[in-house]
Image 1 (cartoon, rainbow, N blue to C red):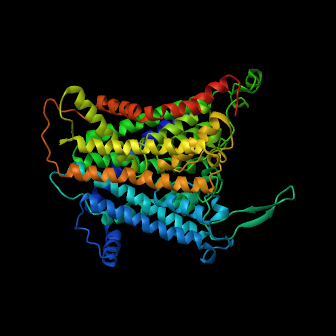
Image 2 (image 1 turned 90 degrees about the horizontal axis):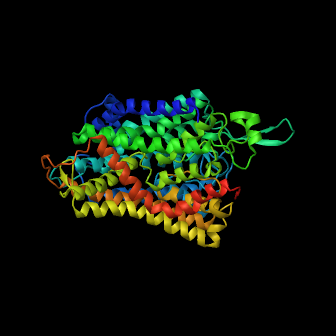
Image 3 (image 1 turned 90 degrees about the vertical axis):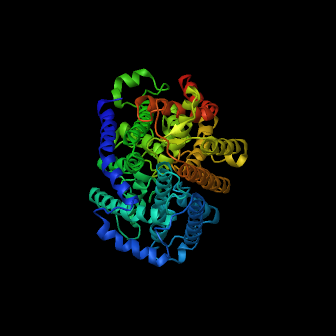
Length: 574
């Protein structure tokens, strides 16, 4: 660990804390229907869209129609995207004449992008046409991110309102998320990335001859426009197979650092929106602090273990070559940005349900890889995906409030709303459904020939590859361990199921809780009310997340990264 490496992390957290009131306050005004500085530009477009679709934004929905709208909209998007991928050979903007995507891969990819997962069992530059990338994948990156933000805002309304039957209008929430937030910020980000060297063109791939006389291909395409929403919307699906490790997508340390801030900023700022819309700003900062604590712990552990000498390389080599010697775990790292840049990027992306990577996660030290797994197993609640991080964290908050209520012998309350059996059952359903999906499908992958065939390594490392291949889709993260061949019928189908269920077995209980809380009256605080804005509450919340979330996966993590760590110390590799 080095001081500059720690400084990178501290600077990022400081910037996120500074940006939270700005963007969080702006999102509050957007979703409250107030005028913003973008209203003169966006309001005419918004009204035109409502007239075209017959939507009345003032007509609010109860939680069931809201959930049905999210589900139906997602299904229709999936069918359209599947058709685009299968028919891409006959569609425009295909200068490289790429064939249509195979049925199982098209299904996996369609489900992946409509659920904001963006798991990629393919190399984008050799599989997808420019039309598929732009009109298919990038469009879904906007819409799936907007749907996540809409669900989070609906839950916040449910907490803030009293004795109300409605939680908002999904179509209005999603439209405003795209027009007022995702599109303008993505436009500015795309311009910034182009200025840093990210390519943006419609040229066919260029052929050239290397200095060794070999023929090679230089990929082209509209990369910067997709790279912006890929990060801002915590999608992670990259134009290139190597994601940000590709020099055309991650050309400089500054562009890589900006990508980290992009996929954390909305999740971070939504905590401020929570505080403003509920009238409890201090509570919003307590939630931010809990998220920051999880991210900090994950980064320090990952950075520590990933920079330790490899015990299989003699100490004499380490002493002779110093800190940059082969004894360090440099394999798979983005050497242009340093080990801290690779480790911080990996921790951030697995905490943000983004999936974008700039290094080979399969090459991380065992316990460092274990932290990345745990981040996703906990639901990516360390700032989290756009919307998904906040509503995932709010599920843990309800559990924490319930446990605290049992400890002091009072009916649990959260911001004036009594938390009863219905809310706790729904919250635990959301938490345990993720655990069941990850563990059941990982067991299926490890116990069948079709699942074992995808792993490139035997032993505990191979098990970690399989475990990661299902933890990432269920958490709608999309990052890949890079040591598993996922483009098989087995993984394409099973991961598609995991991605869809991982999305909606969380969203439906969340919206049901929103509807239940909205109908409750707000009771004034008393001497026995649990304060949810203190450091003690933030600590309790982190403890509950680790106990309730992590204990579900302790046996699986023991069989994978923990066992591999101790066997590596004993001189055994896989």
